Length: 400
Image (tube, rainbow, N blue to C red; front, side, top):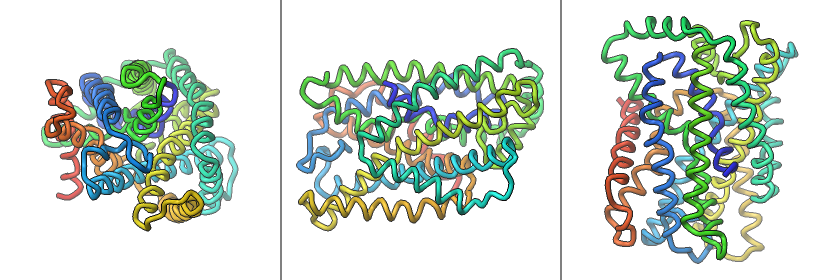
């Protein structure tokens, strides 16, 4: 359960208050209304689909493989990588930004070279990834509980600083926007909400685990997801509400302009001095565990895809192939991280919609077109499909 929580509450969660604080309270109301259908329901549904996905000969993670032909299976693996590899880039950029800001603004260490910092951080992260799935899961599990507790404690510690004026002033500043601007803000927030509440990269591994004999099967896997999302939804709503009540809108605007998460700027007014040092450190921990949680299944799927492409079957030849994949990922990730793209823009116009295709659209399309999944048809699947189409449509904004 904590693995699902750890894969969900991370960089996306820490950018959610920034976006809501920038665009106004109306978006928070949207989160309250759509948080449930955009989080728990599609994850339970995709888990049920994966649990009914027959095991492939290469024993790879379930990715709708048995519902497609050979070419379709390869396409699903490729799409999984295309949809989720940019997420690892977002986490890498966010981690380096948070660490750089912490060292320079909080510890007053000057002369930090971004290129050197990027290479050192990513080398250490890929070193952990090279230790294999068990080590990565163990590291994530060790970080998940402290991070979960820290998020709630930070939100609770801000209660004395709650000021309803922060909310009313934000409403006044954003309420004057035109109808078109307001609708665009809501539209583009759907991918961010879906991204912030998403643990899709971990669901194939979770499904694979619970498909093992004696592991509990579909009922246990669904039970774990429901419990995890109960904690996830409470944590995120409480955290976001506490941030927007205790922080003026100007701080969120500054954070967005500097490509920073909310924990890197929280407490900056000095009313809670300990948060100046604790919150950025917690943000760094969150970025690390989120990067590892997404990178692991992406790297594994890239390796399986490469093995299929080159016809590699023996274990002795698969190992060096995995090394090549890791090296290639390590070569690309630092370049993007150094360039420091706008992470919220990437989430809203690329990562969020692509993840929505994987999490919402493909499972429901299979449910309504495959007899093996006929029992899952109904109102729930229809709601997930509609939510997915609305979220994916944000891709149009990047194109138009």
